[in-house]
Image (cartoon, rainbow, N blue to C red; front, side, top):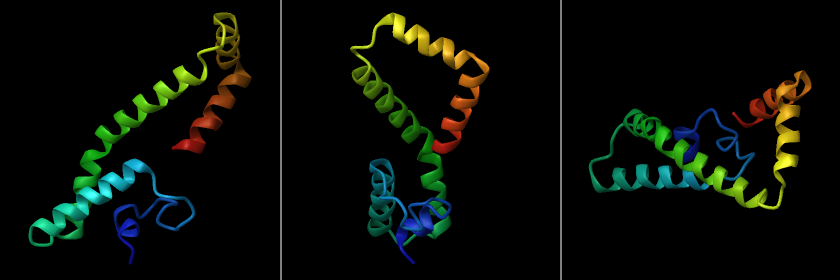
Length: 105
């Protein structure tokens, strides 16, 4: 069984449908590296380590996305941003936002 199938059993990555992300690669590397330096820990120990690192990885990803958005939308006017926010506050915009969020979680 591939390492990513064990560490990320419920992801599309385990099924080979998506390439592994940078953050998952780092976590996997750390888990494998720590397993090679000491007697092999039980897979549950590795899984708990990965789970405990998720908040840190999530924060790093959030900061990366924010920086990317700030760069991508640097030429968008305040008026255009306000229009977008008005849409998101509408019923249709709320449905759109929920649908978008459900695709990324």
